[in-house]
Length: 119
Image (cartoon, helix red, strand yellow):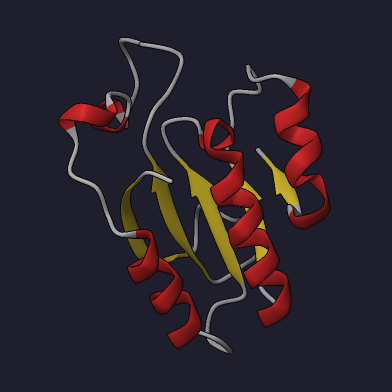
C-alpha cells in the first residue's frame, strides 16, 4: 500500500461531506496535464505511512463523515481501498474514490461493497 499524502480536511473532494483526502501513489497513465503528477511515479515520491493515516482516521471519528481517495489511480491499490472502506464503515464514515476507470473490473468488484461514491 503506497500513500503519497493526506489532506486533513476538505469540503470539496467529497460532495456534501466533511472529509479528508488521501492520495495513493502510482498510475497507469502519464497525462501531461495531470495536477498530481508527482504521485504517478512511485519511486520518486516520498511515502506517507499507512499506519499514520489509519491512526489519523481513528482520531477523527465523529468529526469526519467522509474520506476521498484519489491519486494517482487508487484502484491500482484496491487492497488499501478495501481495508480503508472496512474501517470507515465501522466508524460510520463514507468513502469516495476518484478513478480514471481504466482498471480491470475485478478492482471495482473488490471494493464495491465499501465504496459509497465513484468519481
